[in-house]
Length: 381
Image 1: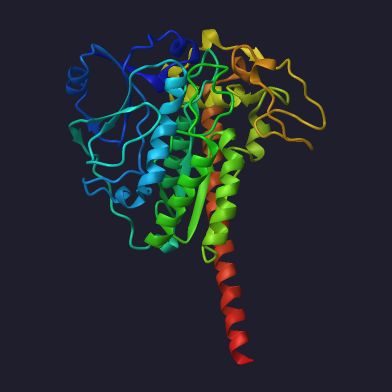
Image 2: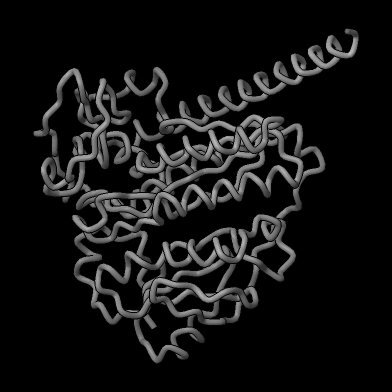
């Protein structure tokens, strides 16, 4: 049996895969018996996609079981994870389920029960209300000829891991979510797309679950630009639904002074798959980077009204076809990446994240004081 790790591939490699190859999406971060799965499917080669870390009902006692989405919404999440694979011509999309029954999914995917060994996980901390829950959102998306599809998820997970090590008593970091939102899925193979509305509904339901567990501050740490506008909607809706909590997100990670301090490219050099993300992957997963295939794609229109870089800027918000600006799939200069810059940017991003987490707690505490003062003042009238 030969296992092909989908998220380690580049988009040209996905384009070359046979379309009758079984495409497996595991539920849970534990271990499946893939030999048994391949035997059930009568396949010698299988392609393994990123595992869906939470959202489903489970029987293994994992504390993430408390984050299960409502059945109807969960069926939409599964359909969203599978639909782009079907749209790209893959005919055998399989959801591996070692957690018991749930509603049948749409999107042309097959549900397959399989032997599963759960990962041991610590319980929710007793002081959850005094910590910030960090929800890291990545994606599985093309990053040019030289970077893997897992780039966004690898980076945002590394930042969460660094934050958990830096401030273990202040945060609870959920496993990075690897299925985000993209609107250029059909232009370059490999890119998936959960769908904006499904993404919003799922993470709004996740906030509901976390609030029920007692979480008071929740921070969406984002690794993929396409998620941003939908996370803003989640935060706005969640703020209305849970006014006693403090829920926030960001545009993207690594936006502090270190971004300019270490970069060599001009504006436009690190929009997508460029200097920044290449440097991160050279530091974190160098074996997945094909630097000999790295390209420079900076010949796109940039004006004071609209600039495409790591964080888009200007008066305008736009979403032109990516193929208008890039033939390799990146925006920026991938050739300027280095492992040393990746190390420096990761350290800076962890410190930025810690500063933000502490600001969230401060904001939440100040609001609690204000509410108590207003309640006391109203009671004296």
